[in-house]
Image (cartoon, rainbow, N blue to C red; front, side, top):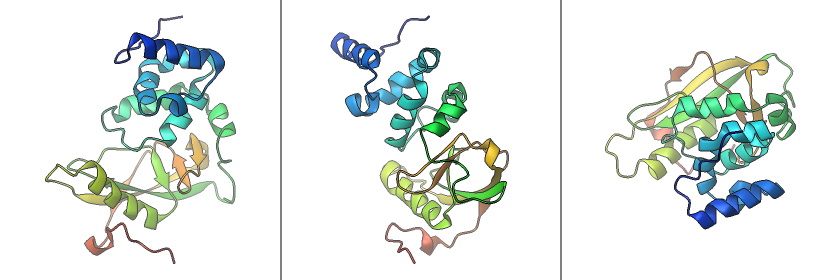
Length: 193
């Protein structure tokens, strides 16, 4: 088995991470955002140990910006996970769905919109998240273009389904397309009807 990569952590922090893994503590709970980088650097070792799925879902749920990781690495971590384990730790993918294919939406902001893995069944939430990302993650950038994308996927393509803030499907759709949303709709004070 390969050695741990504790880059960016002090010796004491590295020891604390090692101890947390030995006893099965939630890395996100113990180390906050620092767990993200550690897991990304060590995901293959965690997968070999059978611990990747629980650590990764907890950390993924509590982070909202993965641009610095890149889509390829994000997908690689999910691909290293056992999909059955991911689904056991999350909402049943088919819960309340009677079709084999579903329509999903994703809100994006910034000068370049990259393919992402978090999709929602709610167009309203996708619009909200596009604006949220523009305000919170692009505050120093001049080009904060917002957009919403749509896709349709087979349920069998879904890695897992979460319900942290809304119904969220983690999936890498084969195709996605931009949908027209009036600029006035991109705001954080959207009301549920």
